[in-house]
Length: 127
Ligand SMILES: [Zn+2]
Ligand SMILES: [Zn+2]
Image 1 (spheres, rainbow, N blue to C red):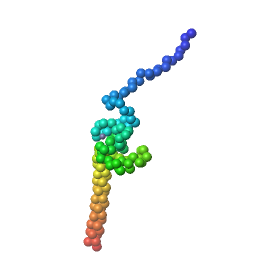
Image 2: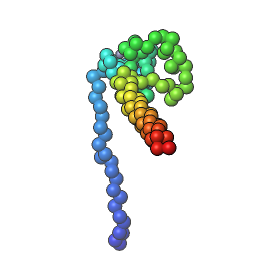
Image 3: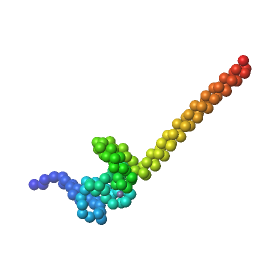
Image 4: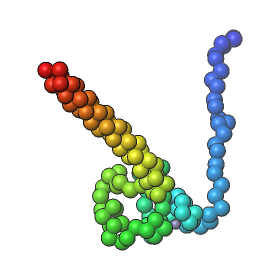
């Protein structure tokens, strides 16, 4: 008896890429290193996550005052709006860009206003 059964391909040898960290010991949920001092942000330390780059920082390392930190962390998770210096610079650049565009638009508005008055003046001259 010949049974023609298709062999099932079992992908048992999918390689698991494991990261080896030289940080020994304590296990914490926040397994992230502070981007300023490059030491891990432990659960019992005041840490904050940048909303843009998702990096963790010690509150102390980014000059966040205790009162400020409490305000930031009293919000529900996901509604914390804090950006690290790096991202702040980027957002400022973005703001500048937006501001520049607004300024240009205003300038062109002024220009068209000027042209209107100029043409009006010309018309008045003709009359
Ligand atoms: Zn730090
Ligand atoms: Zn950031």
